[in-house]
Length: 64
Image (cartoon, rainbow, N blue to C red):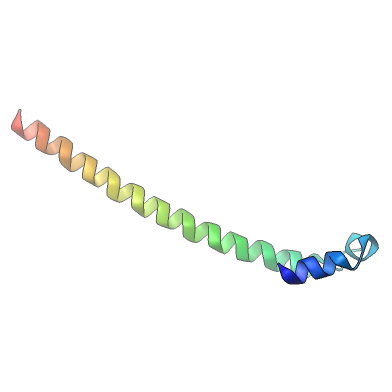
């Protein structure tokens, strides 16, 4: 992100002609990797929670 900020600080014309494209792509790939990790963790957490709830419902059904 610092490299992108430095590139943008060089001026409008510098970034307008695509000189910051590589830095922007690297930032996007980094952010994407973080989002994928966060999504995977959230999915695993939701799966565990769903299994817990299903176990509770199975217990309730077994006791009625």
